[in-house]
Length: 102
Image (cartoon, rainbow, N blue to C red):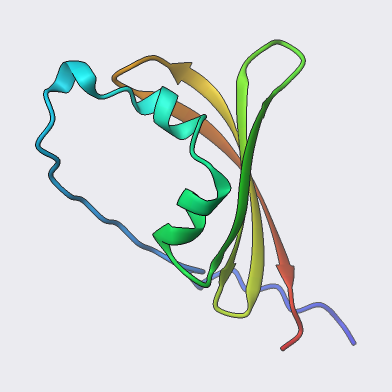
């Protein structure tokens, strides 16, 4: 069976916003992202969010990894922090998609 490469389709697109009633000085985006427990990640979108974790790469930059199902595709995403402070956490994504064959 030959691989089928689709170039004109979008795998997914989503966005969500919410307002929290907390002073901005108490919000630390990078701390939240790099300390989110697996159970917290899973509660965000059950049952599709499977697991998440954090570590550092050789140069000491933070790295987050998550696994989730998007439709019939298992997506394992690696992010490396390119900018990390209390107000913003920019990350570079290195995605991997695995077809489940279902």
